[in-house]
Length: 501
Image (cartoon, rainbow, N blue to C red; front, side, top):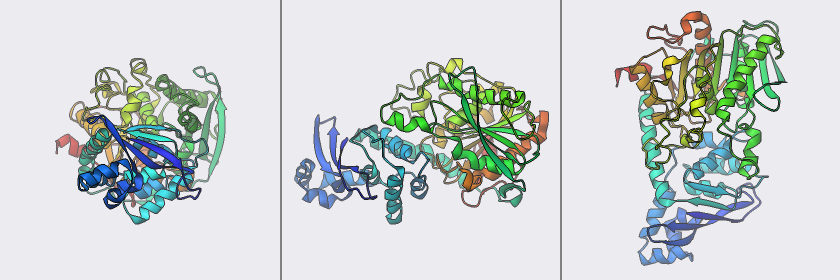
């Protein structure tokens, strides 16, 4: 399906260029028809319309229109309110483009497109009903969107299957909320931006430091952002930890951060290099080195021989590498090229791009004692059993409504195999209603829905000392309760997976 973007209104209701006319390509018939997006929404408009497809629809007594309306007006498995409110400075536009690009290609996105326009349009949709593909097409900028109609239907049905187990498991009783973990700590904070020279990159490595004013508890944590993101999206996590005494450093990974986003979408830069799979863990290790040597100017001394690392999306993959999980290209052979693989999902676009470097990207850092990995793409990248040599305990968090890294194939299946095998003390927490973006937290949000469970895991890891190491009899790092959230229920499903229920 090719959607041609025509000049439209200059109001916030739609971009300056908005998709209005769609050309449906039907490979089996080796032909194509034009139709307006408004006619895709309403079969009665199609049968009365003047487009090519309208004539065929009238000849079939409206049957084609009814089927197309069913396909294009089916609610997408996305939380509309969360989707629409990821506005300025966030990957809102990426979410829309990723969803459509999963079904085809997006071309001609203007450099000046403001995500506030897209947010405003989708917020209006949220007030009237569920988000559909037609809503998304009419909100997008650009010249063309190419979508294979058959692939579209298959992809939506597959995503629903991939989310179903997570939705079932997340319906269990969630963890309770306690002020001890969810409330801000008593310490005042300071924020700094610094850069250091590193050997593995041609330019300096920038980082944000958020730390207690005065002397904290001497603990150090590092947070790695995801693809096309930035430290700012996770400063809320850092703020919550720092208010309780921990110094937090957030690297800005060159080549895969937000500054590269629009340039790549506009065709001015290539996608992130497969070498970034190796460079990102090196960024984190270099910052720990700099903290130890004094090259990174921290407000107070910290221990650098025992560090906790946190990350989201690609950043979560990064911290798993640092924890000792070994990437491998073996599972990518054959599977990356199979569009019918039942576990195929959007994150495979990223994972399959690492085929050339995966076998050279084992970069464990023994100073990392525990990690929090939120929505990591990992099912292809890490072989079954890749966690056997891990030097750090992992808390994996996955959103039940994540459509970029769905919980079924990317979290539940690999973690179940790990838990029923060697164990190790790793945990899986599902966020009911969580998607790929609403578990992050900028500074003003103060930690977001994961602040309690993050603080609980970080405290548990530091308090355990040497006992934090993974092993079949490793003591629990996560308390039995008290680390939940009032808005997005959090459920530890580890024991359920171990029992096989």
